[in-house]
Amino acid sequence: MILLYPAVFEFCEEGGYTVTFPDLPGCVTEGDDLAEAMYMAQDAASGWILSELEEGRTAPQSSDPKKIKVRKNQLVNIIVLDMDAYAEKYGSHSVKKTLTIPAWQNTYVERHGISCSKVLQDAISKIAMAG
Image (cartoon, rainbow, N blue to C red):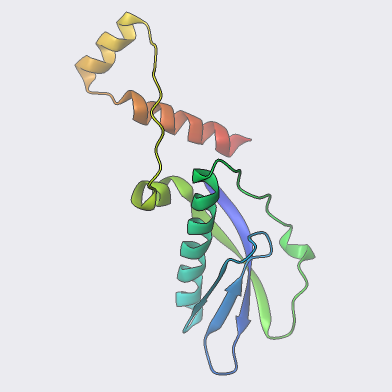
């Protein structure tokens, strides 16, 4: 699942950037330069969203970046979150589900070494991205 969120980057007088997310309350990070701040923003937002998802909540709706008001030392940028990749690397919460498929499909997946769990996860992620 790919998610997009606007982030507010604020240049700090002592150098570096502080990053906040209008749609993710309490999600704050920083970086010594813009590149590091972008990387840290992606990591912080992904962690925030993953926590929500693992607690059974949904990801918040993303704001329209054009409607975010900023001061002269701030800028808005869109952060792209690949939640499938992040959850695979850092996720700790899995739920076991029982799957029932026709016998011929079971024979096919066993012969071809297909993971039903992976196929199902990929399909659900695709559906979630679409709508």
